[in-house]
Length: 296
Image (cartoon, rainbow, N blue to C red; front, side):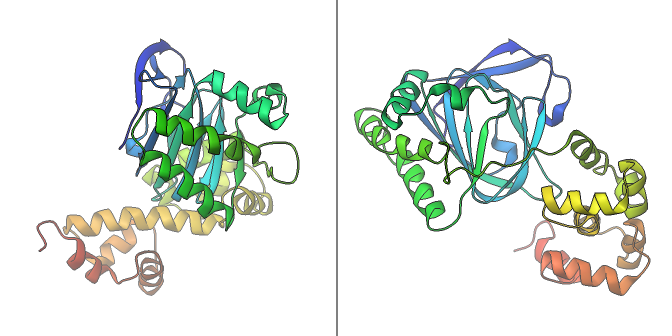
């Protein structure tokens, strides 16, 4: 993880995953006007935090959950997010998915100059209760990715500042009012809570009936919500979590495959094999041979 940031403690009420936390870091830039980070996993990101600067981050690969100001928003490849100093946020896993993100941070004085160049009132970006998020498609996605990575290739100092002065207005343009901005809906509170509860084995093993029971909404509404916010069906969501659990049991190598199938909530071995093959690209036995500890 490349980092141009440092942290200091401050009091707050929420930690990673929305859980109570006594200390929330307030991140600052290390004596620079701008910073760069390239993080390859949720595990590399800071726990729930706030900061003294603005930042753009781009999801380069994967999926995850952005916990932001008491709400939850889905992140996927191409999600481009603008975060303000007042925002309190952090990242969570979504099922077995992980994410890779690229982050550019800069001081409030630079933000004010950019707003002047674009002719946009700063209040447009700062008054929303959520940070701004848009979903980039090609060729804009590759263009912004390359520009952000180029920042990381420059040593902190005059050269990096000069380049950022050229590209930051272009980044912020994608959040200005107009056709370039495609806002993303946050996850409803009930759905965010449901996702957390379905992380527990006693829930995802029981499958769709338990999901419907915990959701306390109609199955039709549940299906629409999963499609709208997570871009998958409830059954696909459950099976992904079950397969993650199955893979961990296979790697322990203490149970027969048929027993693992039943332990994960499947009653049909052929269906278990099909779902496993679809998720991992190989049969359970081959998965063990490829991934067993000490292999090679």
